[in-house]
Length: 477
Image (tube, rainbow, N blue to C red; front, top):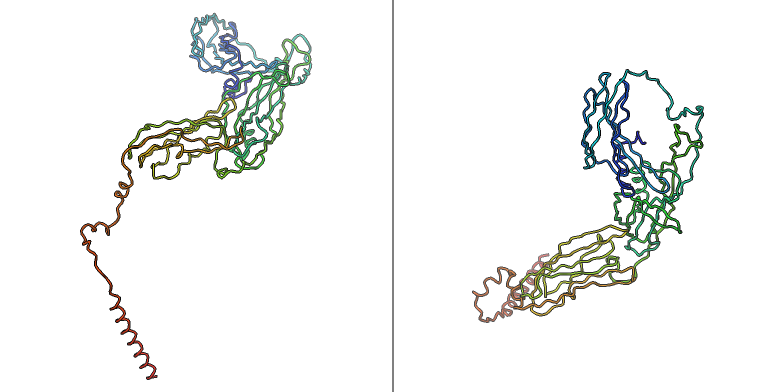
């Protein structure tokens, strides 16, 4: 039992391995009905193959004082299978010698009520306590107290970092999974050690800097049966994420280590002796590399998203009048990096006024795949009467890595617009300035404005004066 493990770590392991356990077993036990005055009487709640979420509390016993509780958990791998147990113990100290009655009581454990039978507790004189430096369980009363020898049992287990693609296009996603595999025939007794802190360091080492990450956020580590090279294993996924390369640099995943607790077994097991010894073993994964290929030539190759997508759309009205607004929703669904998906290309046109869309994104990460929907909701107003194919106005280009080709998703909606053109309405709605405000009040008769003859006369006189002045200045000098 892990008497020295922190309570939060105990709960962590029970939560992680809940999926691999058999049906839960709950019991309430007493340590002994005959105790000395200086010994504790204890009531222990024990639950196996499940997590102790809550309990209603221990009963009061007349003549006894509660002296605190203790807890313990145990999680082990045996023959490729995992089992666990958790217990809470309430200590009671007698106030005097005598015989005491513990009445039957009810206790609620994980929303299940148990009826517990009572007991007669006899408290005798205090016992003299002997101080032992050694663990009493290290000594076998039926044999001489000789040092126990322990044997290391080879573990049929390994740590592996797997990647579903060894080569991808720029922007194409691939899934990385770090898992611990335990063979069904494994005889070594193992369990995880300080997994929270270890995993934090492992993730820092694994994540490449030149990618976009979609983390699957594994909350429960459940054993899943898998077959590798014809041999059965239990797979415990520790970390999983999808990565999307942001440049053409090669993506490298280093080798990472996972430290496990593994028990050695006694060479000569005894009835009272300690028959196992805690030890550690480190498992290492192999380094992996993913190559990144450039996208084929295309005018929009630096802007397009990469993935396997399809389109769904909806429109509020297909029979419209000029000036009547409508809503149009363009949904992009499929597998890929939806965070990198940009809005469809909508060219400027006099036929419609399209306003910037509202964007909504929903992403699902499951079964090693990242899927979802990105919705673009447009508010638009038709300006000219006629029949229009919205596919000429709303289009979205992407690269499909499965087909290795570019594809275009376009609207399949057709709208019919009736009414008068809004061009004149648009011109009249614009302010032309104060110059045009007084046009209707001015005389519209034509007048001649040919004054060029008088301009020439004045120019000649001016030139003559300048010549006379120049001559006078020269003479005087």
